Length: 102
Length: 461
Image (cartoon, rainbow over all chains, first blue to last red; front, top):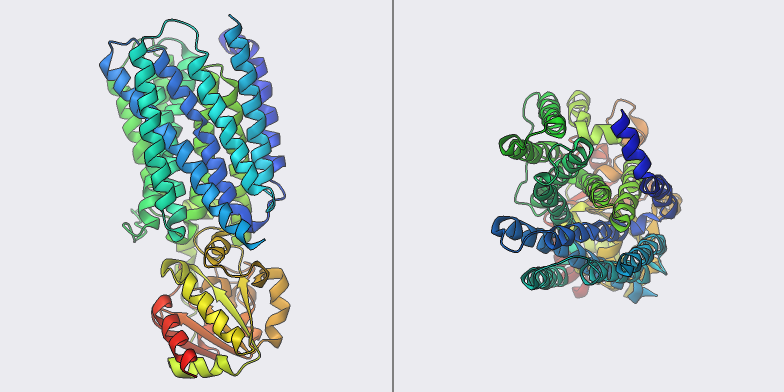
């Protein structure tokens, strides 16, 4: 119990961010027209690619001689980059189509 | 020392771009800029994380990170640029799976540094399990959408089986969190079982429901990223992850609402079961065929035609030829419009993207609410590869599993031509009385094939 309280206390600003982000996430997309559902999903998909930051941190904290961990981290960074770059580029391509019409 | 503060500020800026990006993505005029803003934010977050890291890091690690980013960027860029517009949904699913796998790998790597720290291990388990589920689930969704895995497989008692797997996964995760000793065997078992759960979760769900599932898994991956945020006390991972988690959930709900299908049914497959029950009341009657020539004549000499494009058009990649058909009819003085059901195509909004790709005028795309009153004064409705979204049972038959779903009321038009590959029931597995309507003519064949023939026939007239 104490450990939980301690955790909550030391992470309180993260918990604030968590709670507020939930509301922001719901609020910002609440008026999206159905036409934009697919690009929005795709754009959101690219944003959770932020997990790449975690994979970079893992790599930075790994000792240079630990081949197994480095290889796994290396793969993680590649996967994260795929998510980010692929996600944003694909979204841009979808939206490019819409723009031509205006 | 100051590096950390600068990095925190960079993360703040990146988080703001994510919020703005999502906001702008929700409006047609700002959407593209919004995507670029979010991408720029992601860029500075990544560069900042590498450049402002404190502590001794061997150069080889910087080289490896740079190399990994380079490889990922090149492959991601090429894949995203090359993918066909019709294949977009599976591409999104694939990229989503990559993010999930990334989150799961991070957790696998961090586990050994955190054994004995209950809460931290708990967070790691959360990230690993959710990441693995969304990786496996996305891959299955990808394979289903690209046609490799066609059938929805229903293992007997699969709801029970799924629940069982989930309970075991959760129990292992909890055990590892409280255990003070590293246990590689249980760790990898948990990982494997989480993958299995992701597989079992998506495998019974049919192709039409995939968009909802992808959207749901998308928000899962967001959650997995957010776990990473807690682990590293990293604000940008937390905001990015949670934003996607909550926005993705809302989007999933919005999609379900458009189909009038509770999320619960999509996931637990109650749909398929109730459809079997509803199948007892089969519609009787005969179906009328129409030849390509007759269909061409009918459309050529009418005043107004409304095209209802559906899943079949997307699968057959017939978006260009339908535009050609529309142009020919227009040149003959026929008024042509497209009626877009909110869930037409392979993802909500996907039909608009497809038709935009083949240069269909934006003004010709009519949304369901606007176009429904117009059917009564329309001469011909051409339904291409759509079924459930025009099934009148959704309005008249309370026992039908799709009862209550908003539909395009095409039965009000003077003539209805339905292009379909065969008489097979739609995804919902229920009969469509529209096919037996005396005003209806069936034009059997692959959408692209049939439409090309129609175009040739019309040109000759």
